[in-house]
Length: 420
Ligand code: HEM
Picture 1 (cartoon, rainbow, N blue to C red):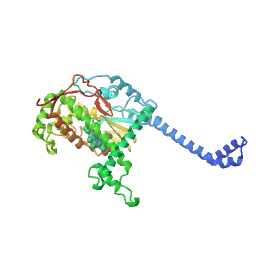
Picture 2 (cartoon, rainbow, N blue to C red; picture 1 turned 60 degrees about the vertical axis):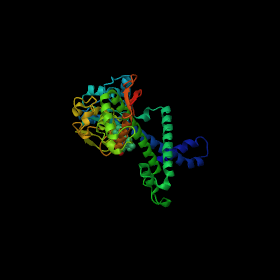
Picture 3 (cartoon, rainbow, N blue to C red; picture 1 turned 180 degrees about the vertical axis):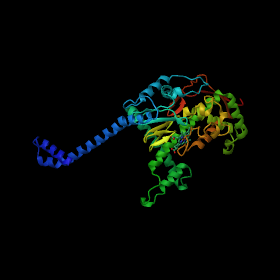
Picture 4 (tube, helix red, strand yellow; picture 1 turned 90 degrees about the vertical axis):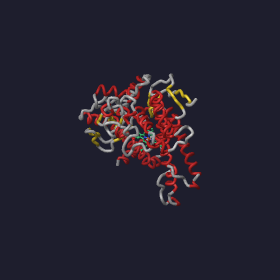
């Protein structure tokens, strides 16, 4: 009914221009439909924006306030993003002593500031998604998520596009190489299994492939990203800690030489599994300098966690870097490098069996954790039995988060070839 009224109005308006009213009458319903559709799209967009930017942040804040959880006030559209950026900028040039592992003021300054202002439990909002932070094993703090879609410039967008195309190309080349081996089968590695699942669709497309090529490419991208930087930074920080703790470096070297043999002996998986001290040092490195400092989970339904009711659609941030330094859980020496705490295994290193969250926990924990540990042990073994090393004097201890935790200015190391 609305459409009829509006189209007839339009055609009446147009007929004043002196054009043929027949042609106008034929065009009018289509134009009306387009206008009506645009109006619906506009109204929906405005409604969604109002819900996300106005109603939801205030409503969810009220729900948390009623439970005694407070935080910095919500600011329209930007949430607390600007405050977080400003706090990060203020500590960006801070340099830590070599013996200090207190990275929180550098990488998550908002926590220190807001915990001081609001007490143990508080929350804040991003411009889009309400988010609450969970620390310890109770509620601890709240944080914001930066929505890069809002903040990124055209230049950044272009860079992302170019990087994505490059990644797509690498994924395709990897898959083509695997496909070239098809005559011999795809092999039983992960990529081989996925390609096999893709090609097992029935002839003529009667049966859909278990996994599409696009999904395989996405998996490849996930594995490139999740598997590379994380493990390389684990090694970087392990070298830093061993470079500043020569006594541990020597203990590990002796263990490697005992279990794996000297430089001429090929490394064996069995021998790597016996590197107990090395494993302890790697876990302690992950606790203090884990590549992933925080993860997020969104509540799919109204949820209760640690006695706090969390509304559906709230992003819950889990700041592992803070939780790994919690003295109540890890003991008074939580801020120190003490690999011995892992001597009875990861589950017994702290008061809570799941306190170690560097690989996350539960069904969505890191699928590559055993592989990462093996890779790191093998690499350390190769280095330790060949070199003695120390952190170079020009090193600046400024851990920074660029998606993963890394030394802001790299890690220069002085190497001494052993047996020289
Ligand atoms: C020291 C090295 C690593 C660290 C610290 C690490 C850490 C993590 C963490 C914390 C998560 C959970 C993310 C979340 O819940 O939001 C995760 C997930 C994941 N990691 Fe790792 N990771 C490492 C190495 C690897 C390697 C070597 C691979 C692959 C070979 C890998 C593949 C993945 C994948 C595929 C997921 C997603 C799992 C899922 O969502 O079910 N990671 N990793």
